[in-house]
Length: 177
Ligand code: SF4
Image (tube, rainbow, N blue to C red; front, side, top):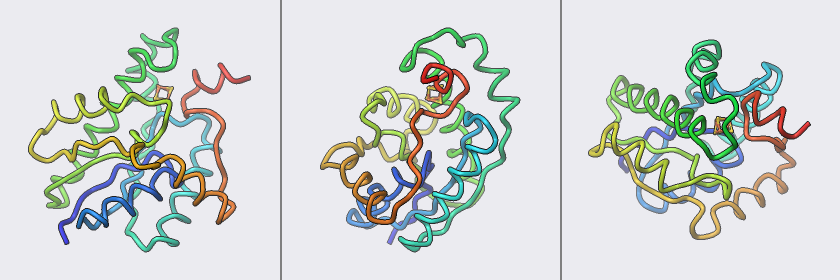
């Protein structure tokens, strides 16, 4: 099997993606790198779900650093943007850049991301951003296809996993309050 570094935005989304990648002949190593998540308690809850998914599905999980101040500094210019706008494009780029670097550090030839599972996220944009970083290494996919989101929700219900009700950052959280 070929190895792929899988950037994981949350454990639930990772579930259907890991199964899809294995069907394709890849063995994923999970990489949880999400400095966008606010507040810190929420960050730790999402790490816990990622750990549960890794244990249930039997994949390795690496935690990235929680450099939230750096994320806030870079994205504050877009704090008034609606969800799906320029702030999100930059947020995707920050996370994908780190995943690309981590894959190279680990000597893993490919990287991809669970971000495209969500029905709220623009897969075309995610793929364009990642391909601009490293077209030879990025596995361009739309993981919401073939019922990816529905399968992930089924996994969360079966194992009673915590499901967040906002995307992750302080701006998305405030818009739900
Ligand atoms: S809404 Fe989601 S994708 Fe957009 S900036 Fe916030 S955390 Fe990132």
